[in-house]
Amino acid sequence: MIKFVLASVFFSFNAFAGFESVDLSYAKGDYGNVYHEAGERIQFNGKSSDTNSYYLGYEHIHRDYTPTTGFDRDAILFGDTAVFKKYHSYLEFVGAYAGDTVVGAQTSASLIPHTTYFSKWDLSMGFHYAHYATGDVYSLQPQAIFFITDMTSIGHSSWFYEDGGWHHAHREFLRTRYKSVGAEISWAGGENREDVGLIDQFDSYGLTVTYYHRLGHIFLNLEDYQGHMRSGSQWGTGIRWIW
Image 1 (cartoon, rainbow, N blue to C red):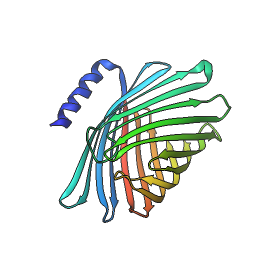
Image 2: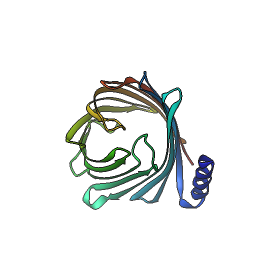
Image 3: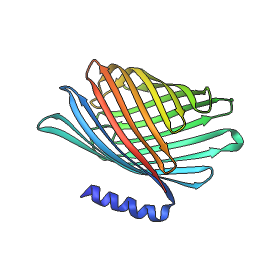
């Protein structure tokens, strides 16, 4: 029932909010004898001006720990990006609310200032807050992206977060596009915070392939995750429709 109500609200809101595209995606993960999960997401994207864009979405995830023990997460997602052309910068705000779920964060908010002042670079520092069933987590996320060409870039992100001590994780990626086909190869590692509050040493590798069209795009994502607490893989697919 909640899905029907939320979907009705989104489609009604779309009629007057100026949305110009919608994202639909599905993902499924299998982590052996730890848990299995699957979920879907719908997100509407819009612009209020040439310097401001926003989105509103809904996400549902179901996770099974055993054949008889599972949990659901229903989250409202929202975000806004403001561009300051005079100062060669832009500012992202991202938030989510998921009630009293034990799958992922119950409430989260991020403020991410970017600068494009330096030629061929996008530099940012993210400030993140998340409230889980097991407590609050604060984190910093510095990120640097270097554009080798207009269609190819490399990047590095780090997460420094406080949860009974400071922990660190990182992610590197290579993105490229040729005509209507794009790809991202990524690798990550470090200390990952599990939802139950435990820290997992991990390494992961991902591949995303995207086909672009004037009416939108479609993508396929594959990830291999190898940690001390859980190991497995995840795949996902999605589409963006522009009207």
